[in-house]
Image 1: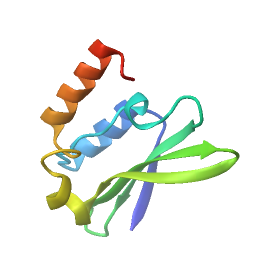
Image 2: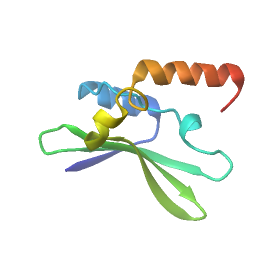
Image 3: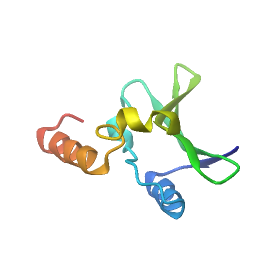
Image 4: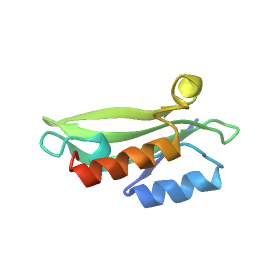
Length: 102
């Protein structure tokens, strides 16, 4: 497996588009508490056949690094209608912005 890191969501999305990734990539403000977490980078792990296996965010809390997956190839069926669904998540993000949940 190969692991890649990205400093911005845009860089990550551009990379994933080249690998036909069809799932949702969360924005930092959706995924992290600005109070306790410091963003380090996004990451992607690809299989030897170049299939996206995991995507996540590395953050620093209290001086320790934490990796949090927002995509796991083994859980696609479990989350394809909610957490991984682009249309559903974009709608929730826009509702959150309008209602200032984030």
